[in-house]
Length: 422
Image (tube, rainbow, N blue to C red; front, top):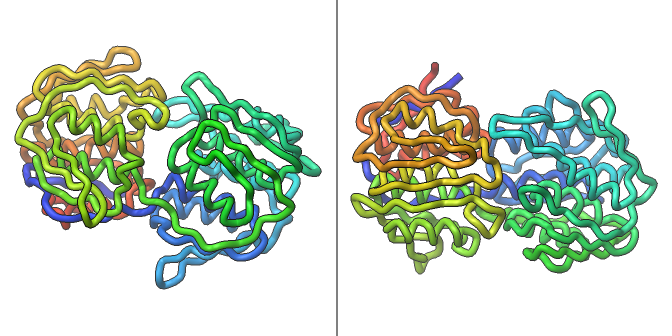
């Protein structure tokens, strides 16, 4: 097991390139199960979660390899395999995205229930509701979802839930509807750029999807989908994390390959607290930060609201702001496991239900801290970048699930950071 050792206090400067979006690549890889022929996917990040999905696809009869140029080439070779086992699905909740493609293309599926995780319970009821509406016969048996259908049929599907629409639920229903007989309308579909990226990939394979990027997706089912070449969009959460790293260290960084249109809420909030964020003529976003910035209130909401996946990073940033901030997570109210670790570093934060109240401090102090999940690890790394002295972030395998060589990118910007064995 490895840890990250950070010597804080160095402003970040220079240029950094954002990798492909993990949350786009995972459902896109699952969608290759729908295709006849070969799919060639570019800009797929080299991450633990991506490799877990590749292992799962191989277990489901797919052939997968990376070319020397980094293109991921996939082809479904054995269509008789339909079981996604617990030992793989339990490693990564996005594995549930194979459910829709398996039912639509192979007529049956047996997929392990993903269960809970460190940031709270994330049920799959909207996935099952949508697939049932398309005609799938679904049963729960000994921790597995068992589903079958001779051919799915188009239907009107409403995907509203207590916390809004479901990203992976929308993905599952959208993939299934692409091969369903007739027309499907998905109301209250998730509008995240990653869902739009999946829809564009499906259309590149021959699907007929309209309303991409809106909460109403209209799908006209087709008989077959063909392999294609496609490039995954840049990762907006990695981009936001790198922007926050520049801001918290009072740095000056060009985050190239970032898509401003995908980061509206993050850009607005950073500008509101006094961070200079501008589009660069060469592409991407230039982030320049003053020595101190202002407090603010942040509430996470479904896209285009402020993303829950940026909550931990923003909490770290606001821990050094002048004044009192309130951060509320309306998506995952329990997603504050990084807070006790930040308090160990000198942050003044008090949890109140699904919110935290932050009184900005003059400085943080390096300490040993423990990452509990993917985005919490990013928040702790940011805190370590500005803390006085040395910070050790343990359990960075969480970070490796969603950030491609993050410590290398930070080091190239001037951070004093290294991996070490526990």
